[in-house]
Structures are given as C-alpha cells and as structure tokens.
Amino acid sequence: MESQLLFLSDLNFNLEVWKRELKFQESEMDYFEEKLEHVAMRNLGKEVMVQLEGFQNKIIREREVMHHLRHRIRMKKREIAQAKYENNTEVKFHDKQVLLKDEMKIFVKMHYDLKEDMMDFFLKNL
Image: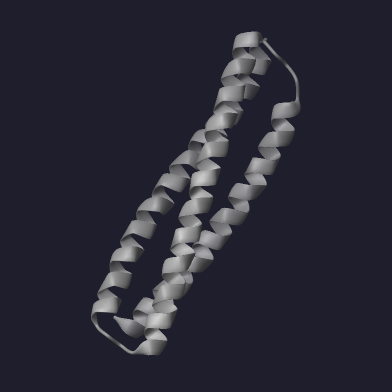
C-alpha cells in the first residue's frame, strides 16, 4: 500500500512539474506576442509581415497544444486520485504516463525551437 502511494505521488509530481512548465511557456508566448506587436508597428515590409504572421500562427497552434496537454494532465490527476481512493494497484498509469511524458518532451523541444527562431527574428527586426 505504501509503495503504491509513493508511486502515485511520483506520477503526481511529474504532472505538477509539467503543469508548471506549460504555465511558464504560456507566459513566454505572451511576452513574444508583445514583441511581435512592436515589430508590426515598425512597418518593415511585406516579407517581415509574412514572417510575423507565421509566428503568430505558430503561437496560436502552440497555445492549442498547451490546452490539450493541460487537459490530459488534469485527467491523469483525476485518475491518480481515483486510484488512491479505490486502492487500485494497476500498472496502466505508468504506460499512459509514458505517453504523456513523450508528448511533453516533443512539445518542449518544439517550443524551444520556436523560441529560438523568434529570438533570431527579433534580433534582425527590432
């Protein structure tokens, strides 16, 4: 019983870390959107505006993915709470957790790639 609670609390810890990571990345996207507005005000030409629109579209998509991941995290936390309540020791959690872990890993990599691309864009246009 105690080892199961420890295992579930470890999974819960991972979920909390991922939730915080998403919150941080959301705040970064707010900041980058502000910077894009500054670039837009400078009227640097059609090519720059096309790049800017591309970044805005990527931010919109990234926010959609963040929303999806947050939903998955909430559902996983509910499953863990239910398993604790029912004293359920099934291993299904670990398999599902690995899938969510892989999704988070891919998302974080894509986020940082976008972040680097945007920072390069700002260096050229601000």
